[in-house]
Amino acid sequence: MTARQRRLKAHDRQLLRDQPMAEEQLTDYPVGWYFARFSEDLAPGQVVPVEFMSHQFALFRGQNGTVGMVDSQCCHMGADLGRCGTVAGDRLVCGYHAWEFNAAGRCTAIPKVQPARIPPRARQRAVPVLERAGNIWFWYGPEPTRELLDISCFDSPRYTNIKGQIHIGRSNPLPMFEHVADSYHFPHNHRAAGSLEYLVTANDGHRFEFQLQPTPGSKGVNVQRFFKPHAFIEMAGPCIAVYRAQKDGTINRTSPLLTVLIGVTPVRENVTVLAWRIAVRRIGPNIPFGPLNWLLARALWFVIAWNVHVDLEVLKWMRPPAKTLWVKPDGSSVREYRNFYHRNIIAGWRPGVQPVVDESEPQLEPQSGGSRD
Image 1: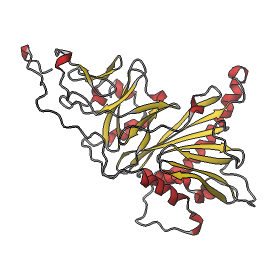
Image 2 (image 1 turned 180 degrees about the vertical axis):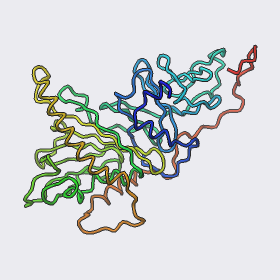
Image 3 (image 1 turned 120 degrees about the vertical axis):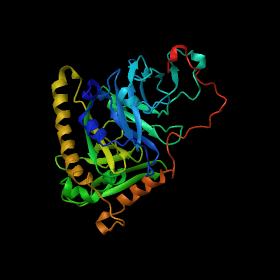
Image 4 (image 1 turned 90 degrees about the horizontal axis):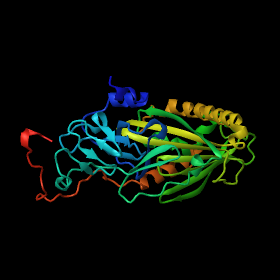
């Protein structure tokens, strides 16, 4: 095992063991931002081979902190940039012939070739990336990209931001993520006291948000075990949810005690990753309240970890039936989420459709000494 492989996280190694050589995307996915990696897990100068939507990429961070995500197959001779690539400055360097690519995928340097002679076709498919709230996100869909929801609390000094966990599911993203809107499962899986009320506050185009709260007259007040406040869930895309704890039915978007950020990303057919992290409002400044802030954040981290665990033990093995057998307690929540998910799909869209290249473009000329570079 190489030093680069030793730096990979356990879930990366597990996913890469089964990675196919070919790329074949069979399923259409919704347009939007998707989770790629925790920011803390991609150090400056590091390159990681990743696969999303059955397409293989090299995810790297330059020495200046810039993050890029480009096609892993080098356009020169096909070396895997995610496995053999290194970083020089803010550029990804192929480990075979030392071609250099920037975060936009453009080749900026080729050994023994003048910059003016670099062929226009010397570029990698590049995916737009965004680093926010302690996560690296990538854009799936036609450009321009859309704005991500306001999750500034994760970057605020008033909050403690803690990364959660990454889980691997043997399912596609829809059945793994629709549980966020599934109010029917809360009393059983999350020990909610009494029945819950599902109230949609927005469901139009790219927006979908709703509240979960005890049904009027319900004896209990818990939305989930160990946690009593109501909940407000805002979708930052069909596969990103922002869960904000609420004191009551009044929506607080800006300063809730607890915010949970959940992302689900398809890796390949029937392989999906789910990641989460939390932001907890601090009791006061870290001086002198640092230990109390940390204890509160860690306590809530364990609450969320427990609740995610009870869901994932079911969701990671989901095999949806050909036709869902709806019953009255299901309500409309899951059906409305499915509508939101499907209306953001562009049927047949695939990343990396290459533009037609003029065949008269300059080609690399043989160099003296028989060099292949």
